[in-house]
Length: 298
Image 1 (cartoon, one colour):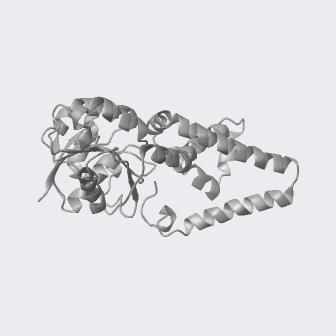
Image 2 (cartoon, rainbow, N blue to C red; image 1 turned 180 degrees about the vertical axis):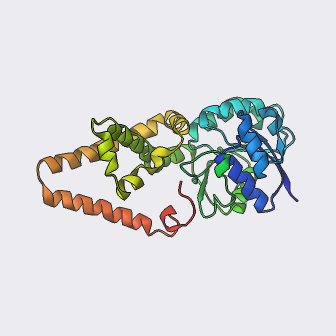
């Protein structure tokens, strides 16, 4: 038996999820909405969706599963528009990169339908956004973190987990706070540093000369600075406490290295650099790490 899927946000993640579930034979009909008409037209042309919804509410009307695939800052508005038409059997999920703000918005908008909401975050993506880059295998081998609500009937989490597993993803469960703290460390901070580094390089009086000499190290370190700035602005603003805590830890580490360099403490500096390099190599050898997969990185 196939289901009807409603997608609010016809972009990379929403589009890829629709393609993946269709490819798995789980979804038979997809209704999509985006405030950008061009995105909906492209989603139709690519076969990502079967029907274009005129409003966000229309995308939620009568579907079996509703996926909210919009920037975190827009999640509340989508929930507000969906709540009146969501049926008692409808599973509602989001795909936002932070969870505490999303959970708060859901509790304040969904009322007695809050038990139907299962927050999720697929740790997969590309530096290029938009439905043009959506692909059915985007989630294969990737982590999807679900953050079920306290006291929620397990059936809702089980339904959500089954859908994500059908895409080839590996599902794990954390609390919303645990999720936001972990992602601040391994995703949000790296992106913020990449943006800050590009600002610093670009602001130098001889920036163009410096950039003309950049090689593979520069390319690898700055790749994620090409990501959608509006998306990452919203992520940083939706997780300020955890991002700030990680920034404090980074400043301490950076200050320590700076002191070792300025004081010429070669042996201590070498030991600390070797420890960091070993930790990085160990992570790269983990079978489930993105580095050991041929799938797109997050």
